[in-house]
Image 1 (cartoon, helix red, strand yellow):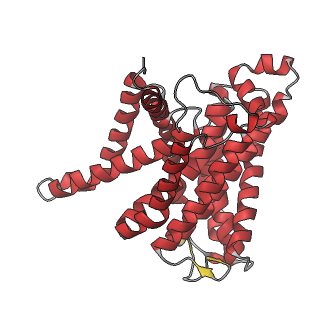
Image 2 (tube, helix red, strand yellow):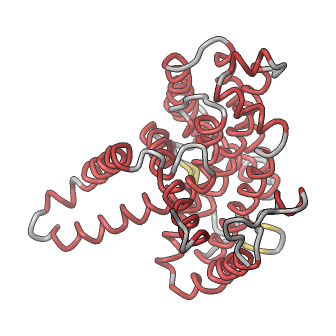
Amino acid sequence: MYLPSGVYHETYRADHAWWQATFVRAKMAFLVLLLIVGLPLAGNYALSVANIIGYTILSAFGVQLLIGYSGQLTLGHAAFIAVGGYATAIGMLQYGLPYPVSMALGAILAGLWSVLFGLPSARVKGFYLIMTTMAAQFVTVDFIITQYVSRVSGREQSFSLPPGTITVGPWVIDTELKVYYLMIALVTLCTMGMANLLRTRVGRAWIAIRDNDIAAEMMGVNVVRYKLMAFFVAGVLGGLAGSFWISSLYVVSPDHFQFSWSVWLVGVILIGGVGSLHGVIFGSIFVTVLLEALKFAVIPLSDAYPALSTGFLYIKEGVFGLAIVVFLLYEPRGLAYRWQQLKNYFNLWPFAY
C-alpha cells in the first residue's frame, strides 16, 4: 500500500516508477483533481497567484539545473528569460508566427544565447563564473534589449500584444483561467522532462561534474560539452518561462527582467532546496505566498502609515532577504528536505526512529 520499512521493489521498472505505491498514486490523483477542478473555482485572485507561482517555477528550473545539478553558479538567468519573451513577441508581431511556434523559437534562441555566456565555464568557475553570468544580465537586458530590441519598428521600451494575439490552435488565451491551464501544462511538461533527463547519462554526468569535475573528467566525462549542454537546457527553460509570462501580461518590457529577478531565483532554490525538483516547487510557493501575505499585512496599515505603501518594494526585498538568512541558519537543506523527512516519518511509523 505505501511501502513500509522492510518492503523492497523486485523489478527495475517498479524501482524507477514515479508513483511507486497505491497510496502515492491516490495522492497524485487528488492533486491533479485539485489543480484542474478545485483551484479554478477559487476565483481570479487565486488563479493570478497560481500563475505567478507557475512563472517562478518555470524561471527557477534553469537556475536549479545550473546550480543544484551542474554546480555552475549563475546570477544572470533573467537575461535568458528576457530573450525568450522578446523573441516570442517579435515572432508573433513582426512575422505573424503562431504562439507555439514563436515559443519554441524563443526557447531555442534563449538556449543558444545561454551557451554563448556559458563558454567561459570551460576555463573558470566559482566567483569568476558568477561575474560572467552577471555580464550576461547587463549586456542582454540593459544594453541590447533596452537600447535596440525594444525599439524595433519605432517602439519605445515595451511591446504591447493586441487581444487575441496569443492563441494555441483555436484556443485564444485571453482570460486568467486559460493562462492558468497553459501554466499547468508547461510546468507539468518541464517537470517531467527535467525528471527524466536527470535520470539519463546526461543527468548523471551533470551530477558528477557538480560533485567533482576533475574526478568526472578522469572517468571519461567530457566536462566542457556537458557544461555547455547544461547552459543550453537552462536557457531553453528560461526562454519558456519568458514566453509564458507574456501570455499573462500581454506586454513585454525590460522592467520585467531586472537583475533583482536573477537574484530572486537563486533565493527561491535556496529556500526550496538546492539539487531538488521539489525544492523549485516548494520554494516558489513559499516565496509567492509569503509576499502575498505581506501585502495583505501592509495594506491595512498604509492609511495610517503612507510610507509603508510607497516603500513596499523595499519591505518586500528585506523580508525576502531575511527569509533566506533564516533558512540558511535553521533549514539549510530547504523545504524539500523537510518534506522528505516528513514523508519518511509517516511511512515508517510507528518505527520512525
